[in-house]
Image (cartoon, rainbow, N blue to C red; front, side, top):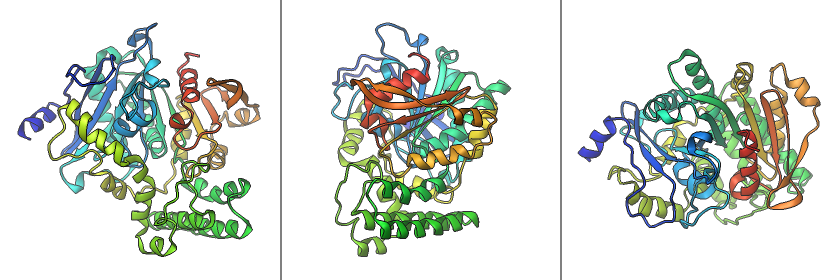
Length: 443
C-alpha cells in the first residue's frame, strides 16, 4: 500500500500495455491515477486510436463520461459500450477506438477504480465534479503533450451528460485563459440528465403514447410527477429526489415493471415490482438499486476485480472496483434534480459545439423531455434550428433502413437514434459509431 500511495502522489503513473495479459488487443494503452484533491484519487484509462489508415495524431481524442453518478467509464463504458473489447474480452466491431483515441475516466471520485480516503472527499455537486476534472485534464495534457493539438471531444451518457456540460464550461474557460492547453472541439450529451424535471414530467405522456399506461395509470403517474415539480419549484431538492423515486415506484406499479433504460426490454424482478417491498426501501436506496445496479452486474464486477485489476497492476489493495459507487450516488443526492440548461446556453453562446443525442426507447431520459428543455434555451440560434427539418440517416448495419434522424444549425446538433434505449452504443453500436464520425467530422 505504501508503494502505491507514493506512486499516486506523483499524480500520473503511465503504463503501456505489455504485461502478458491474454487478449487480442494491439492498441497502445496508458492508465494511471491523479490526486485531484487531498484524499481524492481519480483513475483514468487511455486507448490510443487503432486505425490502419491514420495515426492517433490525425484522429480526435474522445473522453467518455458514464452516468449514475457512480457508473464506471473504465468498466461499463469500456467493456459494455465503446471500448476495443467486450466483457468476454472479444474484439468489439463497433469500438470507437477505430476512429478516435478514447479516454475513460472513473468520475466522480469514488467511482470504479477511483477512490477517496474519507467520506468527506466525495463530491456533492457538479461544480466540485468539474473542478476535479480540471485538475485531471491539466495533468493529462501536460504529460501527454502529443494530444494537445488533437481535437478533443467530451462524450457522455445519462448523469455523465450533466457533469459533461459543467466540465465543458470550465474547460472552455481554462483553454481561453491559457491555463490548460488542449484543442477542445465540442461536447456530446447522450440521454443526459440536463433537465431532470422535464424528464420526469414527460414519463406519463411517453408511456401513454407507447401503450404502457392506461388512463388511470397516466393519472397516477402525472400526479406523482406534479409532486416532484412542486418540490423543485420550492427549491426542496432533497425532497424532490425522494419524490422522484416515489414516481418511479408509481411507474413500475402501473406498467408491470417497465425497464427504465429500454421500454421494449423488460426484465421481471418480483422484488422490485412488489408494492410492499418498494414501500419499505428508502427512496435513495431504491434509486441506487435502479440506476447503479445495472452498471455493476456480477459478470462485470468479476471481470474488473479479477483479470482487469491484475492487468492494471496499480490498484491499491483496499480498493474494489465499484466499492464506493453507492457512496458517490448518495453524496450527490442533493444535486440530482437541479437542471443545467443554463450551462448549455452558456456553452452555445461561447461558441462551443454542442450535440444532444437520445435513444427512442429510453424512458429515464425520454426524448420528449430532451426536446422540451431544448425549447427552453435562450440561445439566439434556437428559432432557426427549430425551423429546420430533420435529415434521415441510414442504419449502417441495414442499408436502406432509417437508423436515425438529425439536424444541425451552427454549433448545435440533435440526433434522434431509433431502436435504441438509454445505452445507445450497446443497443445500436454501428449507428452510434456513425454518429461519432459525423460529430468529429470524419463522415
